Image (cartoon, rainbow, N blue to C red; front, side, top):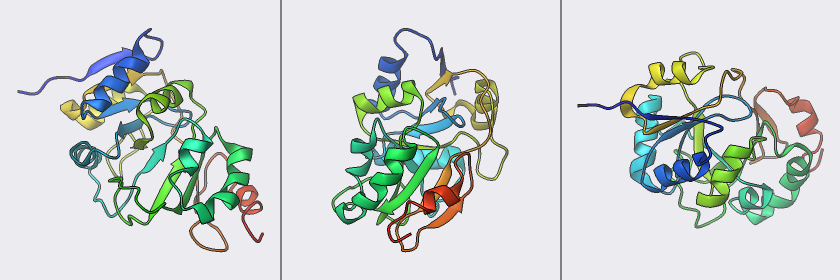
Length: 210
């Protein structure tokens, strides 16, 4: 027998603590962000991440990014050699809708998909997500829709798309459907992986050697 996920409004007084408890217990949740609704789990929890990939309907060969509380938390997951160059972009656009894909620091054993040598990092301009990440650490996140299907703009659409396998949905009202700008900083020159709200050309202009 399946059960419907718990649904909380973003303004619920204990929403941060409830989300943190669900994630620490190995749950998979949906959170509003500054871009789209995100399907989230703790990236160090292999079983939770397997559920996230199954709900998304996506193979692990397509990795997911992590959302962080601040730039220090995010860049600590990257190879130290990449941090200085990325710090300029982070200072300019974080918190905000920019995902930087960087070489991963050795020993960071997160189950984000392949390749395991890189990591997509973002600090969202959304207080709820940053507050949760400050409690539980970096949060694995991908858009809350089935792979290849349209991005959902409401919590109700998310629930209909992903079904009862969710543990918690936080309703943040109607959101946009445009995901973050994604820039690959694992090679020189940096390259654009996905255009988004931040003009990728402006990010590339701050890349090392630009």
